[in-house]
Length: 183
Image (cartoon, rainbow, N blue to C red; front, side, top):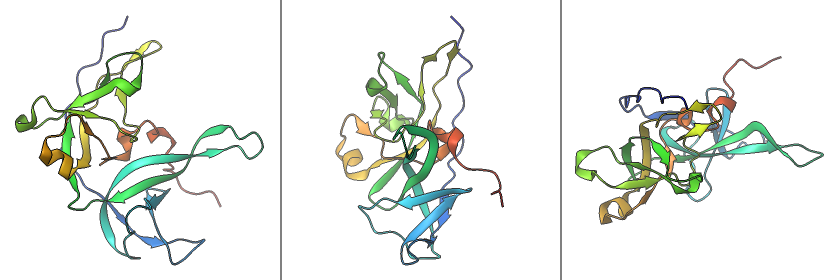
């Protein structure tokens, strides 16, 4: 068994800012881009106005399916975003680790000292979970995310991670479109 790498350090918080632009398919609806990756806003909250810059969190990614076979492909259609508002509490976490053979039982600890011992579950965010993958051992990756402010203030345990401040903290990071478009 390989020894795990040194524990990464939590970087300072950097907000994820996007500009809402009109959709090409439906110019009345707002979309955004993270690098070259198309992003849509979650349906359960209003999208920002066109040309407005807003802070967002990445909630999850939707993958493409093969037209004939229906199999899921390793290509992202869109990243879903949610506008950061007073409803959300920004938190730092020390990285997610598996407690059994299932990522469903993974958790991280909240970093601030006042919240010592509070755990967070990954929710639907697809945040990277440390573990052993074949011959590679991954270390927990500290990062920033968002939880429901009401649940945070009520002291709910465990908290559910609702979004990531950086899409590169997610398992789909390697599939994000980053290069120039071909013409």
